[in-house]
Image (cartoon, rainbow, N blue to C red; front, side, top):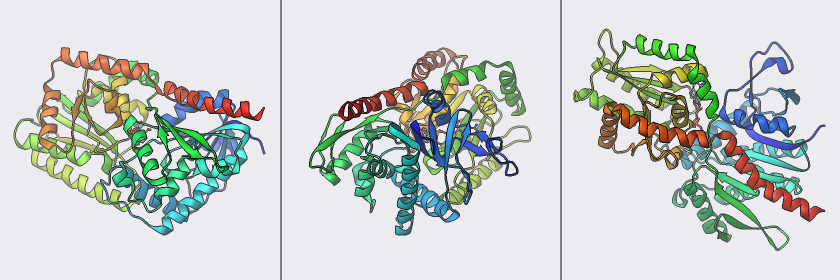
Length: 476
Ligand code: GDG
């Protein structure tokens, strides 16, 4: 079997199966995610491999090459998907790490599946990596992989990036397997987080639970031979492929589509926009509450203002998501029922996923972007909106509980729990004079354009390379 010098391990492969009728690479399409774009140049240069699940249960696929990357599928049974993915990953870790917005469920059966599946990923990564290679593990579904991989392959340099928040110790300590998860992560040489606060929360949990010493970003981890090695736990805020959004936003057909969208909504004076996976962390209900009250109080009028809410389908078999969808759709129905006229709607609600071009057209059509997350690792939508506003217009209303708030200082900042404050912020955004929009948007764009997703992966891999070089030095 072939091995690679650089290997990414993620829950999902960077491809989706387009058709079941064809075998081999022709049956696959590159998935549109940001991580895929971020890593593509590195994967090609390094002759890299990507280990992950192909997205369908019980599917047996042999490793294959796709557009310059060697893909190594990890098989998940329908039961694995239910227990490891929907259960432990998305109904235990996800709610716990997002400050218990929804109650996490602690199931020993789910945990056992999580351990079992993480081991399968670690074994696949161990087999796919060349002697002295570099492995980059992605996200909360695979927190045990770094340690398991280190045990299998002590020669390999291991990085881990955590895309979601790491909670305060008082919450983290609920986890019945809190020590195992910390030890799992500490198998990595570099553990990357979105915010400085996430790295701080992690270090504190390590001190409290494991009694390891920490100094600045370094953590002294016992090496098994009576000594210690240093692991780095640090913030590496993720970003987007800004230039691809700019390119789309400059395309005449995309701009025409933006005009068409405004037109089809009856050319309201202001369009407000929300774009989220339908997830309880995104604060969609708080957004609707504030907007509904502004309409009810007559401070906003459906003749002038429309809210477009794209809520892309997500985790549709997890109970909390089924309930959330019902609640949101009930609320949207009530607000529209109370305020719509024949020609104008209060909320155009779309429980659908769209191509990237349509998203950028929406960004261009929207005067105000509402990001009201109750907790969010970063929130890429905020950065995508900013990158798309090549006209330096538009207002970003941004929750301070999204990681993006650390970088996007000139957004209109909100606490989504404070409904009155949120209402004031929406009014301010709706009424903001163009000159102020321009001042704020230019500063936002500067940040996003200066720090794109390529900078993110380069900075992370540079930090990891220090460990790689040191290890080579020891080996020779
Ligand atoms: C996790 C963390 C962190 C959404 N609907 C459509 C669509 N999208 C795209 C957006 C954006 C992405 O999905 C969502 O990224 P977010 O960052 O906003 O949120 P999560 O999915 O929760 O991502 C998050 C991220 O990982 C990266 O580290 O920022 O905090 O939770 O790119 O545009 N894209 C298209 N059609 C849709 O209908 N094409």
